[in-house]
Image 1 (cartoon, rainbow, N blue to C red):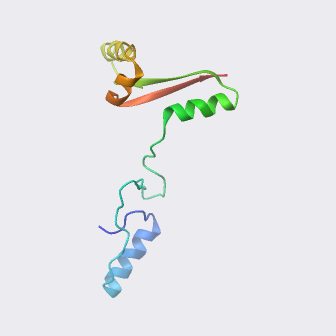
Image 2 (image 1 turned 90 degrees about the vertical axis):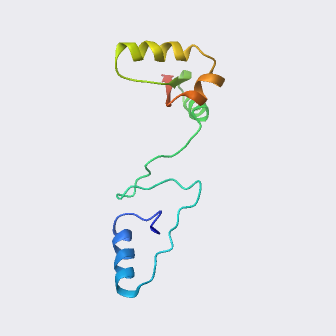
Image 3 (image 1 turned 30 degrees about the vertical axis):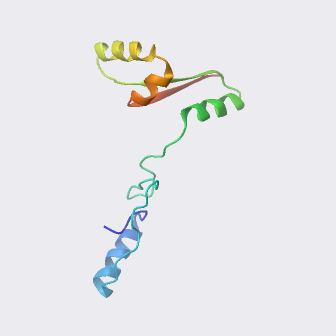
Length: 105
Protein backbone atom coordinates (compact mmCIF):
# COMPACT_ATOMS: atom_id res chain seq x y z
CA UNK A 1 0.00 0.00 0.00
CA UNK A 2 2.81 2.44 0.77
CA UNK A 3 5.00 1.77 -2.26
CA UNK A 4 3.72 4.57 -4.52
CA UNK A 5 6.52 5.86 -6.74
CA UNK A 6 8.63 2.74 -6.25
CA UNK A 7 9.34 0.30 -9.05
CA UNK A 8 11.28 -2.86 -9.81
CA UNK A 9 13.70 -3.86 -7.06
CA UNK A 10 12.57 -0.95 -4.89
CA UNK A 11 9.27 -2.75 -4.29
CA UNK A 12 11.02 -6.02 -3.43
CA UNK A 13 13.36 -4.17 -1.07
CA UNK A 14 10.44 -2.45 0.65
CA UNK A 15 8.66 -5.79 1.13
CA UNK A 16 11.84 -7.48 2.39
CA UNK A 17 12.45 -4.62 4.81
CA UNK A 18 8.88 -4.89 6.10
CA UNK A 19 9.14 -8.67 6.53
CA UNK A 20 12.51 -8.42 8.31
CA UNK A 21 11.97 -5.33 10.48
CA UNK A 22 8.27 -4.53 10.43
CA UNK A 23 9.03 -1.03 9.09
CA UNK A 24 6.31 0.16 6.72
CA UNK A 25 7.48 1.87 3.53
CA UNK A 26 6.65 5.57 3.35
CA UNK A 27 5.75 5.94 -0.33
CA UNK A 28 2.14 7.06 -0.06
CA UNK A 29 0.45 8.47 -3.14
CA UNK A 30 0.30 12.24 -3.39
CA UNK A 31 -2.23 13.93 -5.65
CA UNK A 32 -0.63 14.91 -8.96
CA UNK A 33 2.05 12.22 -8.87
CA UNK A 34 2.08 10.13 -12.03
CA UNK A 35 1.80 6.37 -11.52
CA UNK A 36 4.89 4.29 -12.33
CA UNK A 37 4.74 0.77 -13.79
CA UNK A 38 6.89 -2.01 -12.27
CA UNK A 39 9.57 -1.41 -14.92
CA UNK A 40 9.90 2.26 -13.95
CA UNK A 41 8.02 3.83 -16.85
CA UNK A 42 5.32 6.42 -16.35
CA UNK A 43 1.95 4.86 -16.98
CA UNK A 44 0.52 8.24 -17.91
CA UNK A 45 1.81 11.76 -17.98
CA UNK A 46 -0.56 14.64 -18.46
CA UNK A 47 0.51 17.35 -20.85
CA UNK A 48 -1.07 20.16 -22.81
CA UNK A 49 -1.64 19.10 -26.43
CA UNK A 50 -1.63 22.73 -27.57
CA UNK A 51 1.80 23.19 -25.97
CA UNK A 52 3.04 20.09 -27.84
CA UNK A 53 1.68 21.49 -31.13
CA UNK A 54 3.48 24.77 -30.43
CA UNK A 55 6.76 22.95 -29.75
CA UNK A 56 6.37 20.99 -33.00
CA UNK A 57 6.02 24.27 -34.88
CA UNK A 58 9.15 25.62 -33.17
CA UNK A 59 11.23 22.73 -34.56
CA UNK A 60 9.99 23.08 -38.11
CA UNK A 61 6.64 21.35 -38.36
CA UNK A 62 3.91 23.32 -40.08
CA UNK A 63 0.15 23.24 -39.97
CA UNK A 64 -0.05 21.54 -36.59
CA UNK A 65 -3.53 20.69 -35.37
CA UNK A 66 -5.04 19.34 -32.18
CA UNK A 67 -8.21 17.32 -32.56
CA UNK A 68 -10.44 15.66 -30.02
CA UNK A 69 -10.58 11.88 -30.29
CA UNK A 70 -13.76 10.23 -29.08
CA UNK A 71 -13.84 6.69 -30.43
CA UNK A 72 -11.98 4.19 -32.58
CA UNK A 73 -12.93 1.00 -34.32
CA UNK A 74 -15.83 0.66 -36.74
CA UNK A 75 -16.75 2.97 -39.60
CA UNK A 76 -19.77 4.14 -37.60
CA UNK A 77 -17.52 5.16 -34.71
CA UNK A 78 -15.12 6.87 -37.12
CA UNK A 79 -18.06 8.84 -38.54
CA UNK A 80 -19.18 9.84 -35.05
CA UNK A 81 -15.61 10.88 -34.25
CA UNK A 82 -15.40 12.98 -37.42
CA UNK A 83 -18.68 14.72 -36.59
CA UNK A 84 -17.51 15.21 -33.01
CA UNK A 85 -14.42 17.02 -34.31
CA UNK A 86 -16.64 19.57 -36.06
CA UNK A 87 -17.57 20.96 -32.65
CA UNK A 88 -15.43 23.81 -31.34
CA UNK A 89 -12.39 22.55 -29.40
CA UNK A 90 -13.69 24.28 -26.28
CA UNK A 91 -16.58 21.77 -26.30
CA UNK A 92 -15.04 18.68 -27.89
CA UNK A 93 -11.76 18.53 -25.93
CA UNK A 94 -13.27 18.35 -22.42
CA UNK A 95 -15.70 15.65 -23.61
CA UNK A 96 -13.20 13.56 -25.56
CA UNK A 97 -11.47 10.35 -24.50
CA UNK A 98 -8.20 11.60 -25.91
CA UNK A 99 -6.72 13.76 -28.62
CA UNK A 100 -4.61 13.63 -31.74
CA UNK A 101 -1.78 16.06 -32.45
CA UNK A 102 -0.89 16.36 -36.13
CA UNK A 103 2.13 18.07 -37.58
CA UNK A 104 3.36 18.18 -41.15
CA UNK A 105 7.00 18.55 -42.11
